[in-house]
Picture 1 (cartoon, rainbow, N blue to C red):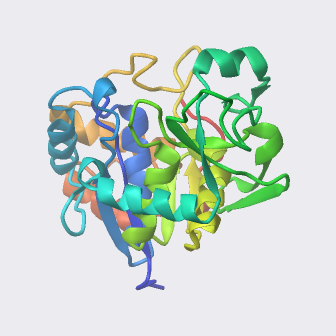
Picture 2: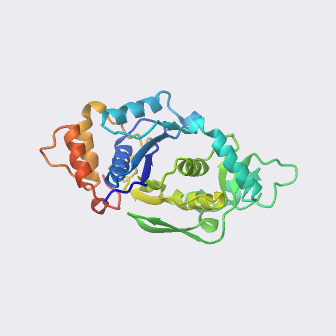
Picture 3: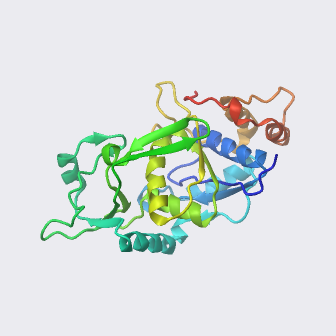
Length: 294
């Protein structure tokens, strides 16, 4: 049955080219949207210029097009949406949900303990910056309570942000927007109803739910697909030197991506059009593995 209100997205970062892991995520996100009769949007998350690779954004779009992906509407770029993030931060400051922080990374590392995703911020500036110090970053206050993210593939995922993460950054001291704020603002403004992405981002989901609640916007449905790992068991990523996918080998690589997602195409699917036609007709989230794949 089609779901006319479904609105999904794929949001690559141009810190490198697409690799096999990001291709699998794109395939799962795309097929889930099409199977639900919904839209699939494309957003380039170019918020960290020092880490971006020149030309990567355009290369990513060309690769997706060459592989046969068809997205709805114009491509959005986070670098053109700063006004939205500023408005959201001002709303959080006005409500008392966000506060200025003067701490350096070195100071936090010296005073904090390790949590689920880095150091747990010890709350040094929660009630005001130390005397003579000016806050340059902005953090979101978190509550000492469990946040449960209901995931369509992974099941319920639970975090107590106060214990596991601490008050987290919305605007960095270097002036760059934090992913946790930008992604929530973008998804809300674009009307995203369903987020299908890699399981490596599951740990971020409770923080995003906290931002959603603090801004008074809805929480999308979440589905975190299995990550692709290399021979050493490491997540395939730009940091682990994952090779870029090649458009000239699109048929083979698309078949491999589908197989990793539990959907190996039949041998008689020989072209991109044949593979996509079969995949759209046979896609089922119930066939997708939960754990890492290689």
